[in-house]
Amino acid sequence: MTGIAIFMIVQLLYIIRHIRLFEYHTKNQSQLKLIISIVSGLLIFSFNGYFIYYLWKILVQKGLFIPVLIYSIIISISLYIAILIFIYNKKYKTNTLFILSGMSFFYISDLNIIISLLFKGDYFTSYTRILIWIFYMPAILFLALSGYNWTYSSTSCRWCFEKPEIFV
Image 1 (cartoon, rainbow, N blue to C red):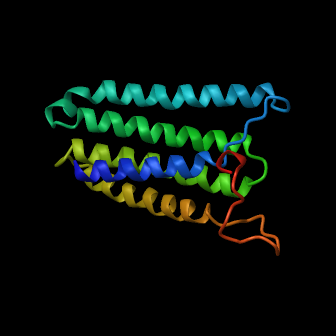
Image 2 (cartoon, rainbow, N blue to C red):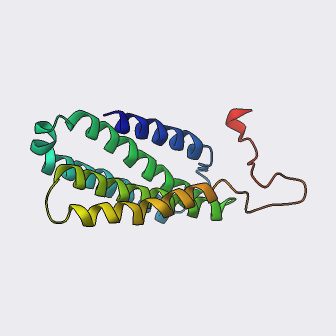
């Protein structure tokens, strides 16, 4: 339970960090971007709902239903925000690609964690534990690299972003 709570806090901090890069301007947005945004959100949250529905009996038996439900919603929001900032942010394309890659790997890694917790002792538990690290390591690397200012100029800090107008 403590581990889930700590990862919830980390995901909430990622959401706060990444939401700063979100830019949406109604004037110059194409319909395709809007459709991709809506479809990706529907796919993520539908998959999340299906996964919880499919495993709810096992989760209730193990006393993990509420924590897993809350965490799955938080990480789905985090992945959705990563998709949105990748689609809509034009200034920091490299950073948003790293954020999207990192959050996608994080999402897959966490799916493997849930599978390994729910099916302890099964033959594929060892495979899911290997997959956790295969996806977790690049997730952390990409999220760390996303903080680097790839649009560096001699007058700006390489590890800093300009403060968005919302925080001024």
